[in-house]
Amino acid sequence: MDRRLLRPFYRFFLLDLIQDQEARPVFIYIVLLIFLGSFTFHYVEHWGWLDATYFTVITITTIGFGDFTPHTSLGKILTIFYGLNGIAILLMLFDHIRRIRTREYTEITKTHKK
Image 1: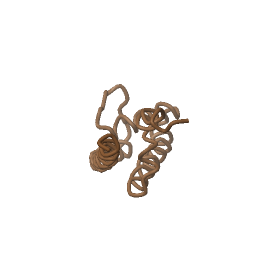
Image 2: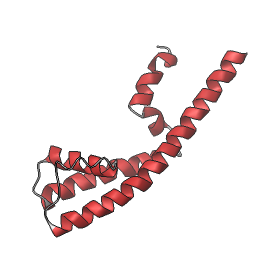
Image 3: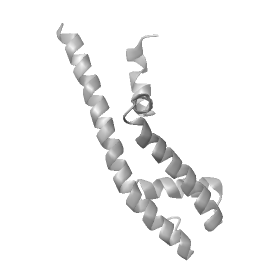
Image 4: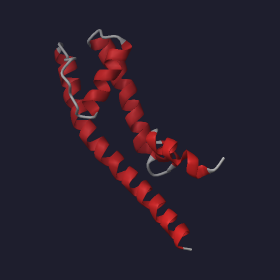
């Protein structure tokens, strides 16, 4: 199958990010942070797995809908950690996405100019 047909699929699911050696550690760190947060909020706040994962992702991405809020002191402290980490991690992730997509665009334009 032609790789050009799969490019939107790869971009949407960030598979091109996983394939890049420089971006892979950031992506792995994000996944580990989500798993750790889900595990922690599940046990600290006594939420279900889906709710804990949802809260972790919403906090890391700094969306913060407010439909789930921690009620324990430990949960509140962890939420501060996840919020601050989320900002730094997302900026690093966006920078890697920009770099990868710019490189792909440059390669495509070079191919079309020939």
